[in-house]
Image 1 (cartoon, rainbow, N blue to C red):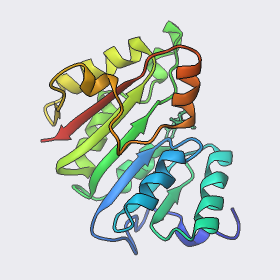
Image 2: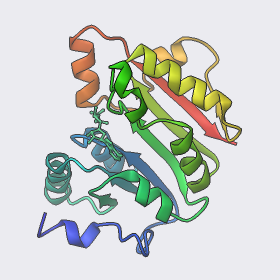
Image 3: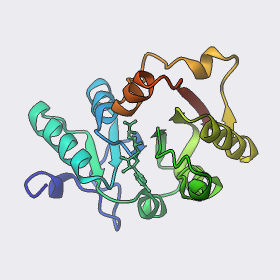
Length: 195
Ligand SMILES: C[S@@+](CC[C@H](N)C(=O)[O-])C[C@H]1O[C@@H](n2cnc3c(N)ncnc32)[C@H](O)[C@@H]1O
């Protein structure tokens, strides 16, 4: 954290300092498997990863150091101040994969994906940008879809059930997804476009 993070931490006063033309954002990257995979497979893209969980940040810092990755920037904190700081229409793709499920009814209001988050994402995403979301919780999938379908800035790209039941090839599995599959929960993969 002390040696590598300061060199690639996102500064909220100049969040895009030193980044390339196209920027993708992953919110809540957990162990960072997906973030690191995307960075390795898209060296021309800058990926901003945002995650308050310190062990996850350390894992990504180790991968950056060991694999010499130069296209990841990190914000080791809640995504909402970052979303407020990012310029309008600056993000070409955003990922929110398996956000914390908060399955108990009394905790549902803690869920990250809501109309308020979608407003922030709509502001920072470019027209035509893709928003990818995943969840293994049926009730969360339902509330995600209701919020997204009601939002004027997002359009669902799915044409049939395989489009949300099967993960596309350029979308690697995460640790959380592997756990969901082991425990018998089917996963949903949603792709929306910022219109
Ligand atoms: C269930 S885990 C999934 C992690 C990873 N995306 C995966 O699929 O393995 C949800 C992650 O979201 C992070 N998280 C929760 N609230 C967040 C917020 N407000 N901003 C950024 N990350 C958040 C948590 O720390 C946690 O690592």
